[in-house]
Image 1 (tube, rainbow, N blue to C red):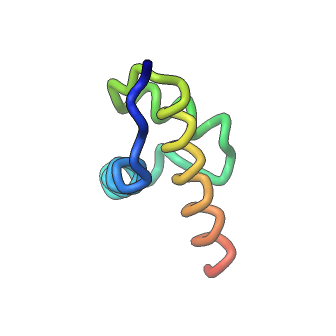
Image 2: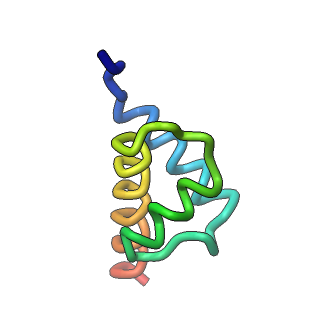
Image 3: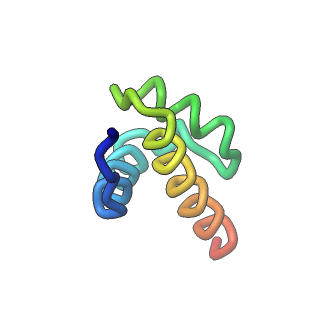
Length: 66
């Protein structure tokens, strides 16, 4: 059985990644998945995808507001 992933964890890690490596991410989910894999030691695909999805949304809303 896997542990539940808290949205807070996804947001915290996503926020840290965006702060440290803003150029590693864009509005493309596939690109962001690869970046999350390279920049973190997240083992779980589900967690990686949640974080990548969060970052993708943040980037998309930032682009929309720019």
